[in-house]
Length: 245
Image 1 (spheres, rainbow, N blue to C red):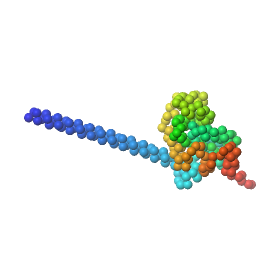
Image 2: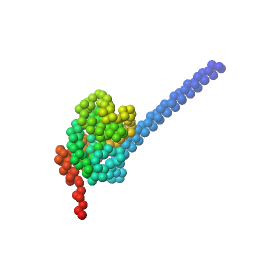
Image 3: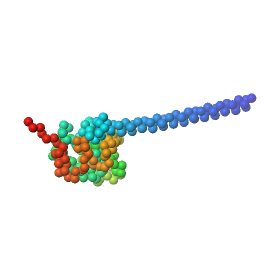
Image 4: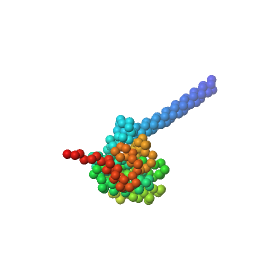
């Protein structure tokens, strides 16, 4: 009789253990599904943010409303009230973008009072340090030095583009700009900065960007000018004539 009870107790114990194991496995599968759903929702939210940012929230014409989509999250040079808005989708590791950098810098010196220039990130997947460079610029922007880091990244592109220690070089640039290095290091890898870069990229894709640099003038994608003079001509054509008295 005792043997029968012991056998039944052992059977019940094994059954209870299996049930606990199955329940734990179910909880694990549910947790994984919830995690995947959360990642999916975040991805959708980022895409929607990029589309809204580009489309002004309700313009199905896409790029036509780019000028209305300039937001406080954008880094802007020049005159925010200017009649001309030039938006660049760019990759800090892109050699062509680096070649356009001097044109744009000179353009802003000459015409900064009548241009609003907006820089947006479009790091190409084949450029291994492009995203990190964009993060460095954004981290510098947290300390009001985005454009200074922007300039250093383009001026020293050949030094860091293929480097395995690009992060150390970027920290050196931050030091030369007298940034708080602890804050720079913390900001460099935040989800907020990564989401901003991803939103810029997704917005560019939605606008038809497939190469860098890509330029939009008053909301319309333009062929890349080949010189400073061509930039000037396009700006002149886009500037409204002064009102006659």
